[in-house]
Length: 535
Image (cartoon, rainbow, N blue to C red; front, side):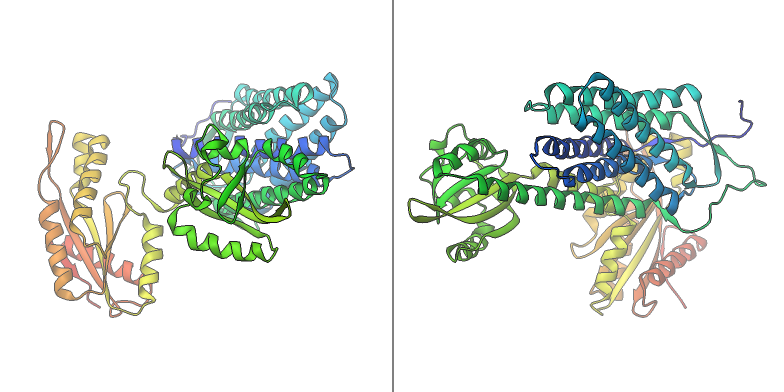
């Protein structure tokens, strides 16, 4: 069918795309680990099956909605809550069916059926979620790419389940299987997005409405973040449960040492400081090649000094035969490189003496992923400055102190002309240059942010009129200086509006609105100047 409507152009945020793929691989790894745990369990324990299905369904769901947040469409999008929840329930149900079959039998026919169920579940979840979108646009699909997206999900599932049927006990299965399944999920999503056309509605048309409650993309992003946190809790619960089960199986200290030597987490046994044992995983985490490099040294040599007192207080609990829960701390490798680690401890009896048994895992990659998510949520990608959300949050915290402050709203004069004359690449570089200048000008105590386009906000805490005037004059003088970008010498000026707390408003919204109004008054009076808000 040939559409007569103009289509919206879709662009992708590469960082969010990569994040969605990594989440798909990570959740696939966890799901396969849990389902493999169920396969090796001697009991009829459905906990692992349900957990794996929830993780798998939540992972596919997270990939889809993070993938949707990666898409930039010049139209407001909300989501129908009931269809969003239905899409989640749908993929969890298909995951239970697929995992149940592959656990029951690893024959070729079962592998094919399980792969089709999982692939079709991923496919159905995607297009039901697309159906939940509410916007001023019609969605149409290219049939060939639509079918190709289904094929990608089935192939990714088939390769993973085939590997499960052949090599699920191999050490490499979890990594390879998670990559094939995660890539199948991501491949289905992005091929499916390529199959989708967002057609602009004319003024007489209205998008279909499902009624009921709707969700914003940011609400779904928050939900995904909560899901990932729950996933981590599930992993900790699993690790704790496995540890308890292993402890019950110990028949001797020698047998236990053989078990911990092969454990996937680092284990150290020390006599309240002096290390007596470390397993191979722990040696690797701490950057060593041999246990002799650590045995005999003090445990605190491998802990950042900021955490020494915390560790010593935890030892007091262990002396009283009480295990201590997991905390995050910074450990120091042999090469003096710091790493983030999740550490727990418990008392351990050996040769009639009490030792400290430490379990630790390198979570540096996870912390980096959390940092990346924070960066995406609170910082502007182009300028590196805090964004509107960060600015409003910090401004509200400062206002709660009750001290006077000023809000400065800055808009570049002539920025549109720069874009029109030299192109958006030059415009982007101009924004970066201006951002750098502003960072050098504003006091350390101030908070500078980029709102959008050529708009910047600053709030100056614990200030007065004269200090604010001096800053505004400095900004105007700095901004109007030429910016050399390649072969071009680019000139812009700035119009600034200023509001004060508490005189000009008692809320974040009021202060920002009044500073904005003052800025427009500065533009009206001829630009390249500042103006205070007048009630």
